[in-house]
Image (cartoon, rainbow, N blue to C red; front, side, top):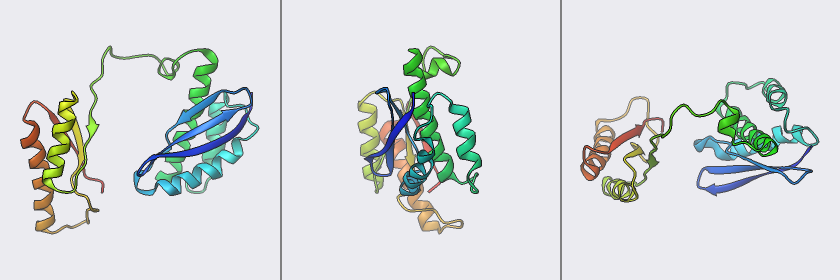
Length: 187
């Protein structure tokens, strides 16, 4: 089996899916990821995936090492995001070849159930609260939010901090204490 092609498919703002095709008709999917620089990740996927054309997708570790070591920017998040999506797609193909889901190939389950959360959005405290309520109405018992719609500065103003607190407070008030609220501070 050989890899014959690949496509990055945008699925929403700042996200994409990688489709890796083989000469035997099997397709593997992965998620190359870096929300802030997804276009750069897509270009990195293009650059790295060209190496894979004509190669056996089941030689995952060999290809991972070759792509990782061929880059001078090994610790860059864009490289790791691109490489992760490519690796996921190869594992997906491997799982289809052997008739097993990837989670079993990687060692099986540790728990019978897992708790999930959903990301919520909104620019204002009111929009964030409405988004959180909608998530709870769908059955989620945990939500995750970005505390600010704009990038955080290393040293921010009291006004900016107050706005972040207002957003988180509005979400907490909207969902009550029985729903967990996780926050991202990386923006």
